Amino acid sequence: MDKPRRARPVVAILGGGLTGAATAFHLSRTIAPEEVEIIVVEPREALGRGLAYSSDEPAHRINVPASRMTLYGDDLNHFMNWLAAENIRMSPGTLTARGDFFPERGVFGSYVAAHLEPLLASGAVRHARAFAVSVTRSNERYLIDLSDGTALGADLVVLAMTHPAPSVPAPLRGLVASRRLVASPYDNARIAAIGHSERLLIVGAGLTSADVAASLARRGFRGRITALSRHGLRSRGHGVVSGKCAIDFAADAPPTALGLLRRIRAAVVADEARGRSWHAVLDAIRDQGQAIWAVLPEGERRRLVRHLRTFWDVHRFRVAPQVEEALDLQVRLGRLETVAARLVSAHEEEGGIVVEYRPRGCDEVASEVFDTVVVTTGPDHASALSSNPALRALAAEGLIAADPNGLGLHVAEHCRAVGGEGSVSDTLFVVGPLARGCVGELMGVPEVIRHAEHVAGVLARKAGDIGKALPEEALAVG
View: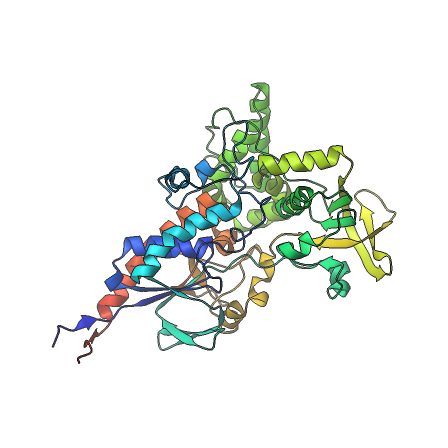
């Protein structure tokens, strides 16, 4: 009889978009396959694409230069080198006049998927093509029920779900069954079906709104687009960054949202005096985001989210140059207008959807008729606990809770989940954007990859400890 082998602990990663795939990838590089079983639960055919990088729309491009997109936190050129090594053919306009590459988002999805494929082929990572419908804790392990009717047991669970869908604003909820309302801006088929000369309302003015407008422009849209948001702020472009900002915003700073804002404004003004744009300062804030978040008291974090989040988002989440160029052209042609206003009501008539809104700073309500309304308000992270069945089940058992800032899930050090009564789990983890309310900046690829690498290290150590305590299994004979 062969020598008995030791049973392997099971790590179940729920969600196989970029966050989940990167966690599995780095975990497999940190711990030997014979010491752990890694299962990624993801309904899509390929791992690593997720919502963002599964798009087949040519107008949807990555929002930062390819030189900053990588699976390896210590090798910024890895994606670029892969593009060259694989001789990937990129669409016209990918290379900007400034010398930066902004490929289509699907290309980056292919890059991530390609690096998971050898792990799947070798068995180092297993892909359960389904989604989790329930997660329960039993006898020191987790039982995960899947949408295909199967179930799996796990010793460690990682919550790496995708961004929740945008929530339909209250004034539009009575129209969810209408063919004129596009509740999901990621439904490329619905977007493609919008007529070339329609009157279109896009609710939201951020990156997703820009994607919709750019997609329509690529198809020859000649109608009129109104992008409506409370502040009327459009996502900014990349600009030209000359040099880096050397200020450490997390050190010796007043631990208040107002104090941080004043330091940022002073730095921007100083750079403007040197003939430099604001981009370098905001890039430094992004790079230091988690350190800055760590020094802010909970009340100041909430104050920052309430008062400054919108302004941060439009500077932090920048549109690709190709998208910015398309939007600017639509503005010049009189086909795109961004309006600062709040929705009041909406109802459907034979001629379209009648929308009433109150422009910012005005008491009077304006009314317009639109052929189609598209909701692009961004991921509704605050609804994660109620919109995802697995998270609902975990919350019902008191194993997870919303973070105090309403941005996702509550986590403690090393992204261990915090339950409803404040208990901290050593076997349930949250990785990626759902942890940002407690961790800080976690929405961009560089931050997600570094975070995934960190959590993978924690998981490897924990799995190693669990594995030592497991009994040996006799190998099957005959």
